[in-house]
Image 1 (cartoon, rainbow, N blue to C red):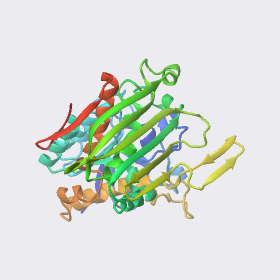
Image 2 (cartoon, helix red, strand yellow):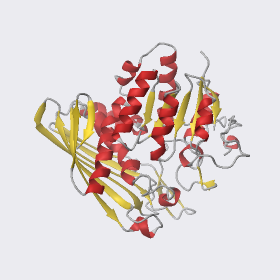
Image 3 (cartoon, one colour):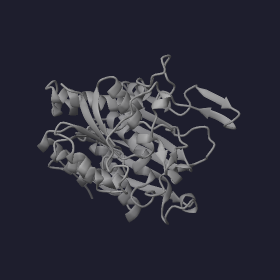
Image 4 (cartoon, rainbow, N blue to C red):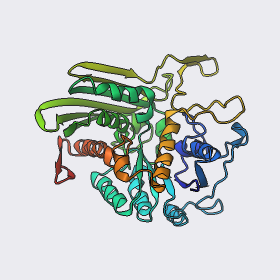
Length: 399
């Protein structure tokens, strides 16, 4: 079978490494999506690509692609439609765009038989998530939510070990990025989405995957404000958001666990870390603590003026001895390869959508809990009250 053709929707920091016409100042200076897919094409797993130049960094890596709209055309927010229309059923797209656009773009692709990889969160609204799930089944396409932390070796190992530690009791997580990210995201920060959707989605998904026997029952959110507005965001933009979530064991409501998920985009500029990230999981027979910001690898550089903790376990940008891209073992890369391999296996008849849902991959069905918690958190902030989560006749609802 011919390699998978892929359309990349969204050309911002995560796809290309460019923000506002210049290179990003984050740890994604040459992007993730584009670089990974160009390399997967080099390896023969991906075919035609649609969607600045990074070939000079990696031994003449082929970075050619078809652009929609063309370089001669002014910005067109509906360009994704013509780009998707140029695909054939069985091709795929990646969606790395503002949160409010995930649903319409994914739905348009699904209804045309296109497989979809969406950045987290899959959607902002629980109803949209369930609509995409139903439409994907109706059209027989695979939808993968790009929760790459599932493939972080430490987090993946923790998930396996949690199975032997008894009943879930407590989970606390923290994830932050420096204030400079508000410049990157100022077009949508506080308008179309918030820091909880952006960063809490990571650890809520990890927690969900670690405790499949538990279901969230209610969410209470709290947000701090002040810094983001002073940095130019619209009035009301939260700096830091914490979600307090009650979980109940399925089939035994007497067993209740607590989850606290905190995310911030107003961390210090020179903390030496782009993404501070850690969690503490406690169960009836043991506990797990992970600090994924400081992994025992630090670099002192006079030009940086500070000590830096890098994370090549996510994306390794240093080339190999032949000058080729050498980041195939990074969990950021693995996430995309898992998607490409799953779609290829589905098209070749080696797997089914049911088997993919049962594999532990972050499919739409396996991430619905995360969307429910995130929307409940947003509603709790807006309504200043606790929001309940219920499942009735197979449908998730917020009360």
